Image (spheres, rainbow, N blue to C red):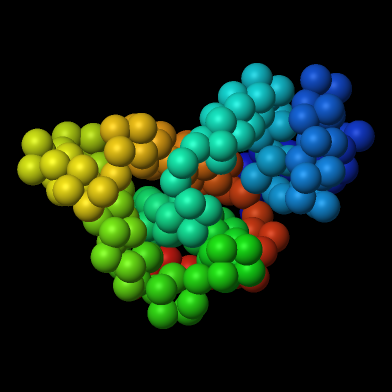
Length: 181
């Protein structure tokens, strides 16, 4: 059960959030509870949507972005994000169930993606304090400096949503997935 109200409709959200929620609805065909609950603060919603939109235009493939979201969500124990990104990884990025399981465990069947996922896990576990060797491993895997920055950005974006959902108690509105034991 959520700890603060989740607006039941776009019209029930604060006036200054309604245009952003309408844009989400136009893009996704619905407004997931994460967006609804964050809409309690129009500024937080605007910031989240801005970063999400900007990173979505980056050079990392959608499949890699979903892999990162799954790894970060698992590390942070966010069942909402695990549920949402399992759905998105399967249905939009077309990742297999085995790949999704590996991503949640901090790896990948794809050698290049595995390096990015492992790096994301290291960022979360070490609160950003990674070694020169870990950064070099990302470069050696073929990621550009821009992609390296994007990986960090995706870790931060997903940590933001993980924390929002955990603190606010966002009700899961995707097929439910629980964190691994």
